[in-house]
Amino acid sequence: MKIKVKQAPHGKETVIINTDFIRLDSFLKFKGLAETGGHAKILIQDGFVKLNGEICTSRGKKIKNGDIVSFRSTDYTIVKAD
Image (tube, rainbow, N blue to C red; front, side):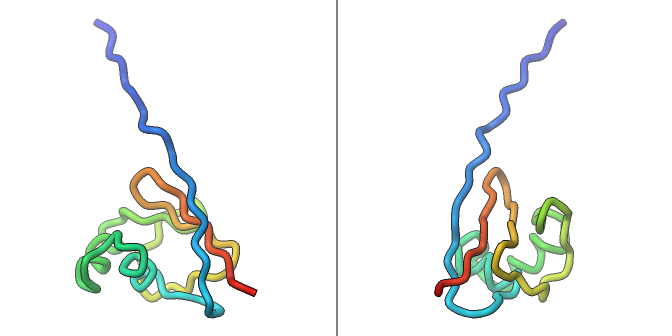
């Protein structure tokens, strides 16, 4: 028996921030990926969020220019506004 698996296309999005950094939990709320800070905390601590290709479980991690946050099937590239 053969099993066919369809992989969802991986999206890419650029996110512009006006500060030097944004905390990971705040980023999830900012993008509407988490409804509350508590929801963001759970998503991060349960390993659903990657930072630069590695699972990040630190909700206070500072996300800076050039970092890539991966959540579900989308990569969010952080760019600091000039």
